[in-house]
Length: 312
Image 1: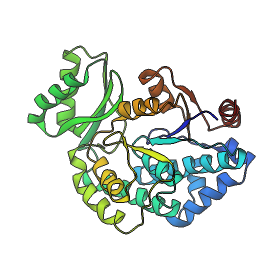
Image 2: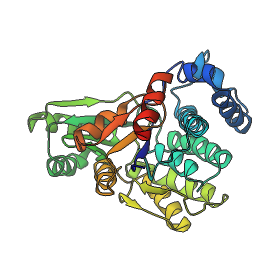
Image 3: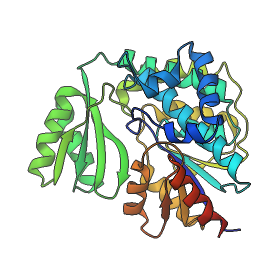
Image 4: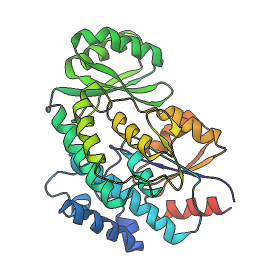
């Protein structure tokens, strides 16, 4: 059997009505959402399908919703085929999905953790004071230098190294605005603010990280049953204490997604399934390692195609 990997999306991949087609195929989808709803004491499936209160995009709801969607797809995959990936990686929040699917963190614990994680992140920086922006067309060293220059206006640094030539920066709004201007002057193809309420993966998240550390101390983390690559160092970690430390650091350190994908490829994995809604990670992976073949999983045709390919 050929080796393949699973990757798990982070915030931004949520969408109204996600997984509705798969829910019609198997009761495991809604059963997984019901399990999460009992932890949150909110109807998470109703939020994802109708969102009458317009809260799906609030980070403390988005995070458990995406985690639940990814775990639901993982469970459906397990129903449909005995095939198992040899390596897992998640982007930001998606790292928690990977750890749940690798049996390192229980699903219920993870739902509680990411719900609180979202609350801590939002509380750390009042709305309007933080900002993130996508920079396209500059080298990493250029962005680092520009952020250094812009820091006279406040905190700003690289937050996500998403693909070659595509980096997200985060920090205080004034400093990010200054960095955007400097990036344009330096020849960036695009330098655009992102529609997010929290400046993730920068120093402004350290207060949230301190709270997250206390919350993580309340749960049990086990050695993963499947190799999981962590964001902060793009390395496979098996030690529960180090996994916990890396999850805390992940809140204020950049996501090394390019390095994570390169490690997947170095592990002789040439096919990956994006486990959850959307195809954001598939697009990034194609730009990082074009020889990796990517498959979706959020509708019946996609998951059937992925299983057929992995079975070949």
